[in-house]
Amino acid sequence: MRPHIVVVDDDEKITSLLRRSLAFEGYEVTTASNGLEGLKVLLTADPNLLILDVMMPQVDGWEVCRRVREGGSTVPILMLTAKDDIQDRVKGLDTGADDYLVKPFALEELLARVRALLRRKPDKIEDAANRLAYEDLLLDLDSREALRGGRRIELTAKEFDLLHLFMQNPRRVLTRDSIMDKIWGYDFSGESNVLEVYIAMLRQKTEEGGSKRLIQTVRGTGYVLRGGEGG
Image 1 (spheres, one colour):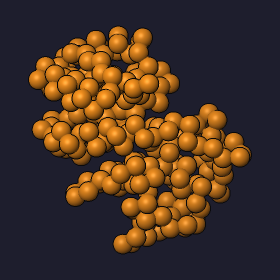
Image 2: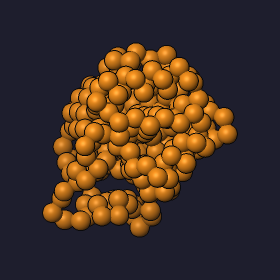
Image 3: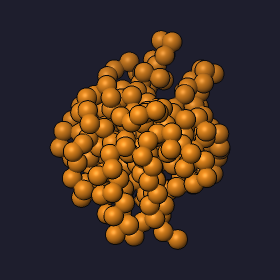
Image 4: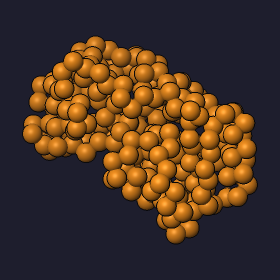
């Protein structure tokens, strides 16, 4: 069965380009011209990937993303934005997006990101135990919930996957490249700081209320889950 991709964008040239290009690559493609129409499509469709423009009339991309995640869907979401601004990236990631691409974009790069997101397996967590724990941090793999000191931590799908990777490898230094490969499936090259953004968000959420830092930076190498107060 061909992977099904839903494209939601109010720019007819972009939707037409993506429809033709994705179909040529062998995907089944459904398009919507605005956020409201996109939500209606998603009521009946169960796509393998959602490509979502940010700035749209009626309902913008952030709101569509938020509603999709609130509905319990873990479909990978690639957001398209005309703004190369860190706050817009963080907002998109925080509402549940898995990746973002700034317009104008190279078609080859978009197709590479599509392939990477489709390689993700929603059920890839296959631990024998249903829970992982490190100090006062608990990860429930069935409900995909995280708790610290009994306090529930709201995580996006990608944040959960990243924290799960750390908790599978406590006190083991993970290089930046290995994290990118395991979580995103390909290398964000150049000036991309998507991993740093996610680490910052995870720290903010897990350290709320004065809890000590557990995700430590290993300068020049990567990150490690271990106790202590360092960076």
